[in-house]
Image (cartoon, rainbow, N blue to C red; front, side):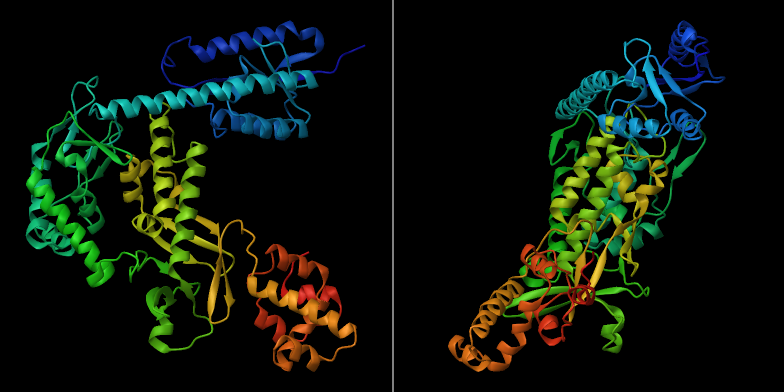
Amino acid sequence: MTRPTVRCAVYTRKSSDEGLEQDFNSLDAQAEACAAYIASQRHEGWRPLPGRYDDGGISGGTLDRPGLQRLLAEVDAGRVDMIVVYKIDRLTRSLADFARLVERLEAKGCSFVSVTQAFNTSSSMGRLTLNVLLSFAQFEREVTGERIRDKIAASKKKGLWMGALPPLGYDPHLDRTRRELVVNEAEAETVRRIFALYDAHGSLAAVEAEADRESLRSKSRLFASGRRQGGGRLSRGHLHRILTNPIYRGLIVHKDKTWPGTHPAIIDQATWDRVQARLQETSGRRRGGATKNAADGTAPLVGRLFDPTGDRLTPTQTTRGGVRHRYYVSNRLIANGADPTGWRLPAKRLETILARIVAERIEELAAGHRLVQKPDVALEPALQERARDLAEDTRQRGGESVAPIVRQATLSGRGTVRIDLDAAVLAHRLFANEADLAPDLLSFDAPFEVRRRGVEARILAGDRQPAPDRVLLTALRHAHRWAAAVRQGATVREVATSVGRAEGYVARLLPLALLSPRIQEAIVQGTQPVDLTLERLSRTPLPLEWERQEAMIGLRG
């Protein structure tokens, strides 16, 4: 009996590109071992497919690999029956990625086998063994990441420069084995001049204008590929980052701590202290007036927010009961008065939500090794650590932290918000090359809904957490209690008198007892539509049919 042919594709991978230039490298060795294994299974009908699927210098922590994607495209087309790898961690080191791979392969009737590990995924025991091995592979990867992060922290504590692009005023040491910076005197003069200008004027706008007049420019870099970056005018944000960068005081920054660096300082302590004091004073005056309270009147996202019509959202505030409330409102509401299409959004919640969205985006791309267009295996752990720190800072500090990162946020009116991030600021915060940042990081859409609720609006973003409405809950309890009294023979007037309420109020609430069970359950659990208010329920005639009630209030099936 002739056995069916099993079409076998060989996949190889190496995390670093070290040694790949050799005539016979690690990828070749893996491919030879896989070819020999396929030959040993010829009696089972195994046949090698022409060509190879190689990924050199790419981490196994991501599935976004050219060779693997070409192979998966062949699997989807039904042209591969078996994937042969040297070791299972050549295919993936992530349990989550493995689950997705297995699901995708099984859908096309494809399995994979490891040459050095005696199992394959065509059997349940093979899949169990594979899960165990992948658990250890993922554990090894996480331990390695922790070890690298600990090494970076220990090195920075000793004042060493741990890579990335050096800031204006410094160059990396010519001896690449020495983790330290050396002063670039020409650029250092630019840095000293910037500090002197701010010390004299106390205004970023004045410094920006003077820097333009004096033709002060950002750091110019020439890469090995011949590409040139930088050398442009210094924006206000760039100037602020220079004025607040402790590296110019000879310090190395790690998270929220600084350590004495091995590099020389460009700015003396007295100048640094004066500039920081003036920056703090200006910040407090701008944000809080005489009280210097950052919560009073601050609008960190001013100039960056736009409603669905393209109108800018302008900060405004009001005081009720001695408490100041901040809002972002469509500019036309201020200029032209009432407009049903205008928005009036609570500022604090809007800032918090946007900060959370940006933080989650950074974390998501960092976890998938997609912060930069071409991940560098050697620098990836440090980049991921800085991304996690940035995401955590953004989430904790809200609008104050996210404002410099967001270039523009536009409400689409279709349940999403388009967020464009500032590439220069992100590159600075991540110690990365601005041109290398992934487009998916710099511009993306996120779930974001704005729904009317009274004269204001409610914001929904991402997964909504249940939020019971106490007013609705209380009204529902009253309606059931009063309806029970009516069923026992009491009149609406007698019920109103007994509870000390107006007869009209009791009459308006009684129909709530006739709401559909799904609506009542939603109110109790806090999953009712966000724009469902007691005012709306009590003022709107309710149909008797439960399905029509649910459709009317927007309760989805």
